[in-house]
Image 1 (tube, rainbow, N blue to C red):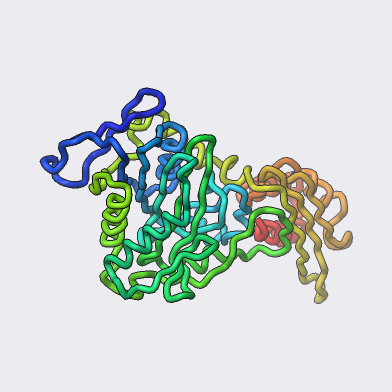
Image 2: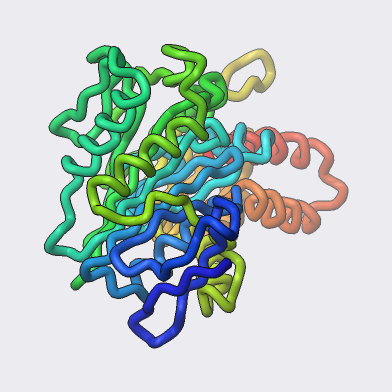
Length: 373
């Protein structure tokens, strides 16, 4: 059975019902509860953008549930090098995404529930949404100690963060989204959200570290499905709407015209890395040469994710100044990225095909430089 929902542009949003077909008869008129069937972070973020840009939410609020496979999601104005361990994420195949809302960096996996509350701008209220979640949790477990904070987080037992908040406020529409830790992999969360990169100077929004805990650790009956159903019931009661959860496919162009191009844009290097506020990296390395340690200094300015200024200083007797200058100039305009750095340095090395000693020194230097990218 399909549920039509009016759009600004005259389209209809069609949502597959989660309950048996016979259980649905009426067209949704006052709001909807949606759940994505996708676990792809880019597709689900695209749904948020699409709803924000296309739906008339006057009198028709929406609650959107979505879960992702392992991903790190940074805020719109954040620096991924400052916020995460990019090398470890590449090794583990963990996706990096930049959302269009502000706020701090979060780790997503299938043990984390994402909730997005869509309203008109004048009805936007983050605290009321968080109180709704608290009521839902207490309906399932009355003895559960969960409180909303002034920072719009949710704390378990007064000390463990189980939810963080971010939002986007448009001209007429707004959304507030938050996480809810149910059974997230704590080891992955702590490792990928710890940046190993040193010497970064940036005005980007920085995340605030917190001690976290899964609700499932508190009570093994608090599964993702139990929590989503409880929140959906509380949301429906609060807004006096149908409490059934409607499944949506975020790749369906009939339901969401143009949505796949939105998802593709969110995957681009230009959006994920290129939108990073201007920053600089300053690092000092030591290399062993003839039983002595030599100091190498690297200073790089990055704008729009690309190297704007590069200054690598090595002792002349270890690496000739001419070669350092060629290396510095070759980096200008390139992406601040270990893959691109490898390609550039390998290309430059080919101009010195017979100098094995130079190749060895060059390899040491490039490995150090790639380590800060």
